[in-house]
Image (cartoon, rainbow, N blue to C red; front, side, top):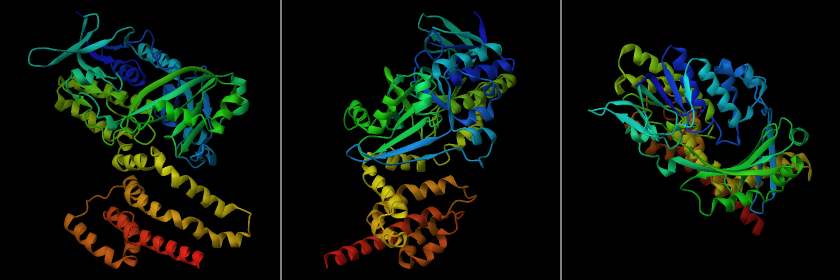
Length: 497
């Protein structure tokens, strides 16, 4: 029986880069893909972020047949009646940190084209590649040591290290005893319809404005993303959220005139309805075991903010290949040695994405994936723009009227600041070297409400203080909200009088 140094299960971006890395370091590597060809199950597209091109040289040479470079993104906001109230767009900044980020937002491609290309690069690096091979579990020797994998035909493939790159429902993770399944609250269901369209029609109607996000008070956050000759329109939310059939919400999204206009202008023809799962973890914790490393979706490495997955799969695959080489060189494939994989990804852009995981999760659940919040967020943003830019009155009069327009939203905004936005901003800045002392935190919770607002305003101006997360919510609760409610009552009395 032939034995391998590394067995990679899954021929997606993470698995192919893991195999490419391991083979490039001289390891005898095989990558096993269950499909007849990599990416065959993925008709719809994906947006490759600039990070992919910054961190992987081979990506700079990759030109796929149906890629579309997105140089603009647009956010659309609609109300309960499916009427679009406002939209705004953004483009790359000339002051972005590296060249690719200054040039584009994403490169939109089809996985059915991307995955085979990466699979081929793994073969070029020396990895053996096999398709139409479905793995049903890992193989264990006496004592529980993992020695390989077993296919659905009963074949045993022997290897020292198994890299599980087999997606959200990872057979490797489950049969290796690392994890049974994700909690439903950690998984989102995404549904969309994939459309075909002529390149010339999309060029005319969309051009580089190829990323559209749809935020509403009646359906979860939706999207319409465009490639060279097609686009997909869909939405998603946590598995535990759906109050009605997902198709109901998708139909509500298709009621938006802007969505219908895009389909008409591009002369889109529906090709396929699609449904898939992505993880939304705040802090991945089960990413390795004895002889096993997990990458990409199998490890839960989707971005907790907007579920970007390909870059994190590729980067974690690269790290897994390197750690596998170190382990085999040392002759130690135990869980203890492979724990350095977790240290590696936590110190990388993968781990950096989860620094604010819990705070990001609070914002996503509180605003992003919460149509109820849209009932006040959308009119608030519209009223703010109207108050600043309308020509119904003189701009001096409009400026005087702005507080009256926005005050009704302050209680909700203050609550959101306290619960989600302030914790999010605190987590995203540099962490303090020393954590706050519990005793002093308790004292501040008792004292600050009595001496706000002056002390709270002073403390809040110190963003690097470890006590910022205490001061901010107290400021919102004991100053902003009472002030807003008092002003609203005063205005209502004046109007009645």
